[in-house]
Amino acid sequence: MTFKEKVNSAVAQALETRLDLFLIELKMDDSNKISIVLDGDNGVNLQDCIAINRAVEANLDREEQDFSLEVASAGVSRPLQMPRQYVKNIGRKLAVKTTQGEVIEAEITAANEEQTTLEWTTREQKKVGKGKETVEKLVTLPYSEIKEATVIISF
Image (cartoon, rainbow, N blue to C red; front, side):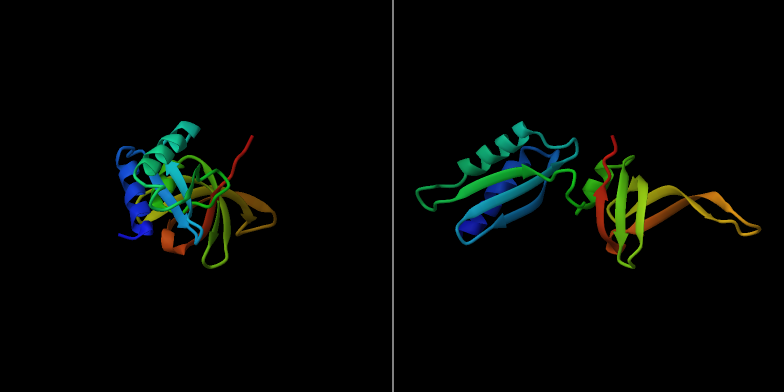
């Protein structure tokens, strides 16, 4: 078993005990620097990162292969990558760039494994007469049509 396979196995074992957490990214460079990025259904706190770090480290042998290990949360500014992240953020506002180049700022009102539903209001030209009117918009986007989506933080 290669060192990379051992790392993958150790991460999988560590996450088996914490079903509320899920892997966003696992990177390992040539100098054996292991970077693990996690997200969770209820967020990820420092204690979660420490627990996963310890569980992964316990399954790897430094005598066999030297390595450095970094475990971090996905963070708010990181684009959403998995359907589970969309479900977690229902009710929050997103900035979405579609594959057609459209940019939408909208609230997630629903999400599942294939698609997400976004709702927002916008001002559009009246169909009859001058001026603008407020229009409610609703779109259901398959994840394949989303180029990038990030949570908008408002204070």
